[in-house]
Image (tube, rainbow, N blue to C red; front, top):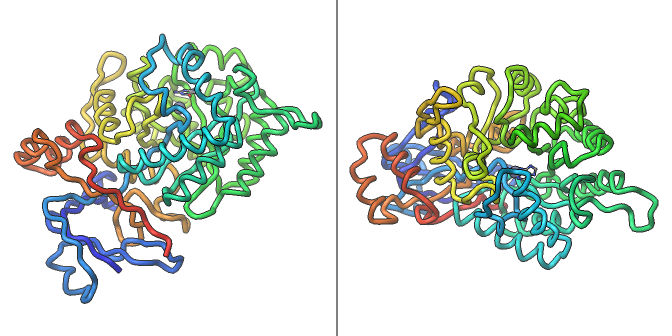
Length: 445
Ligand code: GUN
Ligand code: ZN
């Protein structure tokens, strides 16, 4: 057992609103092993109340620091680390010009391994302790990312990117070397083999990963849906309704479906643990479909602003009642930092020309990138699943140590904060990787 004394931020999901935070100015976080040998939160609360209940336990005192749950990134592309900041006239030209050429390089295991090591380190440096990530259509990239995550104990979910058409050949799934299976059949066999190899190993999970409907044949989407039914505990990740040209294309390719989102439902790809990136241009029936199937949206505000895709409609999502969380979407997204992403989400909420503008509360922004995203992944402790994204007893001990004095301006602004909301907002607006003094990951012991 070990304990940490600092200010502590966590969420009380049993309270209303669901994103209500609890802030202990002088708190104690006690961590120790659970039955499975993972380090989890054993107790948390005011230091003065807890200190006598843990005699003999080493207490690390972190004066002036804030302990908060590790961040959960609900959608990010590991092979796009070097694509950040590539400007284009919208999604489809950006994919063609920058993204596809870079992703081709990941057929080389050495290149994949080098990029995976950097990627995992960068997530941790920014305070991200759980991520749902895209790799490429090469099994080598999936192996490299899982290997790097296992090494650093990050909770990571990824899978073979399914794309059997509409991209350069070096980027598509490959046929069997002996010619017995075509690329579509082979991609599904490879997905199942990778799933069996990695899902549930350490803190790793597998995601069935059709890139987006336009990159997949009907046969490939059908096969992905069969896998999703066969393995209900694995995740599904894809993109939907990001860009108007993309939507036109998807509708032309699958005209029998009611909508772009409906295409995924038609192939059995909407269920709990299915995460759809963007969800910008949905109608009310689509939103009801999200809610009724238990699928979730990964909201990617820096990406949507950078590529000019549109604005996630928070009010409509809440009216319909489907779940969502925040995501960086690097490299369409511009930053690994959850602080940049939370700030961009605030801008997106404020946008009031295409929808009603609203002001998302800082506790809500923070919740979207921690507990809200964990709930979207089904990793909030319900149904026997692990719990991340919070620091209540039983949660895996993934947390960040924030230094609100990390820069002169942060120190000045946070010192004059008069409420929790003001403090959180100051960090969201002024924060970046400098704010994250340390990222602590739950150990398997
Ligand atoms: N749609 C299909 N592929 C991608 C991708 O790599 N990034 C984004 N933002 N959208 C996509
Ligand atoms: Zn994406």
